[in-house]
Image 1 (spheres, one colour):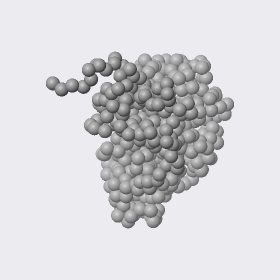
Image 2 (image 1 turned 180 degrees about the vertical axis):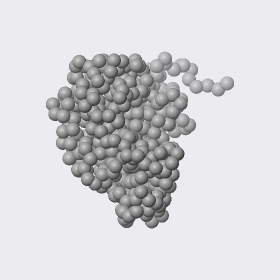
Image 3 (image 1 turned 90 degrees about the vertical axis):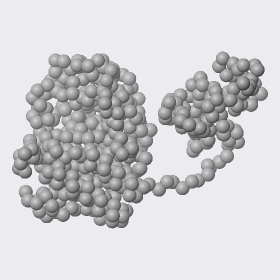
Image 4 (image 1 turned 45 degrees about the horizontal axis):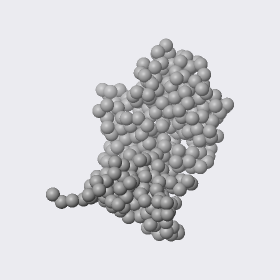
Length: 467
């Protein structure tokens, strides 16, 4: 090991301004030097592909490129979650099912699949001793060896408590329902369709070695690299910056060969309240959620002895960042990846899609647009693509929401307070529109107007008045 100031090794790109590339390189150079990482590789993806990568290394000469493997630790959990969501989408299980229904005989069978995915099953954070990340997986040949004598220190469904054994159970669930090993399902259902041929359960050359750096001296100690056995679905994978860039693109937009955009968005949706005192972080279904510089990020962090990793996606900015390093601790890869997203998003903000008119005019829908009133609160209704609608408060704060059209002529809420709620048009006997009903809330064309019969509780017959 020699100077930490060896030159970076970027992938030339015409997609970023030279100033942006320099800012990215400077940020990872500072991180590698201050975090004392033997090596670090990072990548940024935008518009469906990796557009930049760079590295720093303490070895003279060429640093690692985007095809060098590193262990990615708990980013593996997101892959396992995708496999479970695929089973759900195929109708082979329901997220509300207790684990026992599909994987009988465990001591945690009362927990639901959704609780396991979101770390709310009440399971312990770790498997019983010895520390599973630094010992051979064959020390824990059965699920009972992973769960131990007290697998659920917390009541299920009450709080978020991160659990590595929970994802071991999900990997075993995939095997039980799919009828093939977790590794085979992973390869055929995710890695091959997404072209991730450098993501494997065992290291394949070229790959980095894992190192511990002494906290009080600039000296190194090699870390062991164990096969995690049953714990593999929680953290086994090796991958590259290029492969994880492909995965990040998928986590932002979905891919019908693997999982729909709608199901991937469900993974990115908060499933539980954040930890007490940490209101900028949460967890969806196999995806960590955070807020950095006002920007919403989804993805996952990962660590195993000798390695740290992070993948963050900003869907709103269409920017993703991956950071991989071969050091046990000291390098704040989560903050680093968030900064890479920020640098690109702020220096080269996303161009909005060009405005285009709707492909056709539906006169009935057009007649619904404009102001409506919930009591005295004014909202505007406008048409969106695919016969959808959106409600927006016209003054002050309020409950804005988008709605998707469904075949029965109603709409279902997509976000905010009205997520999942039904919006329907209520008509008079002659077919004319009386009011809108949104989850029992009545919206009329005038505030407490002529449609008094439609307003719950009625309207004072004397109407509006002065003092």
